[in-house]
Image (cartoon, rainbow, N blue to C red):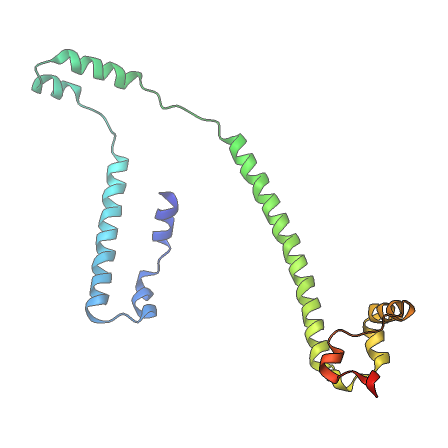
Length: 174
């Protein structure tokens, strides 16, 4: 309730209609809502300031069974609201919040590093020459594992590129 109350107090009623561009009946409805809101807030404040006592004598004079009223009065006067120590829960919430902030900062660092890496990759892609213009030495310099794989295949006598015969035909017939 306190959060709702403080949020309602933060509204700039004078500029709200102007900022939202309200005119005519909508602006009038907003003004009447503000008036009702202020009246309700004033009534709640007045009622909360008044002492809240139950007039048991009135109920005894109205009701025939005064024993029930005596029992209710005894229970009412003996009632004590239960008090809870919430410090442990507040400490746990604060620890959780601190851990969440720490985790969020770590995630932010990882995301920033990945973003820089992606920007570097994008810049590399944008400035790269077309694949058709690259030489074998440039491809091997960029991806050394290609040269290792080719050397391995040639040493085993299995130098065949998958799909080569389908695309260019079999040159062994010449």
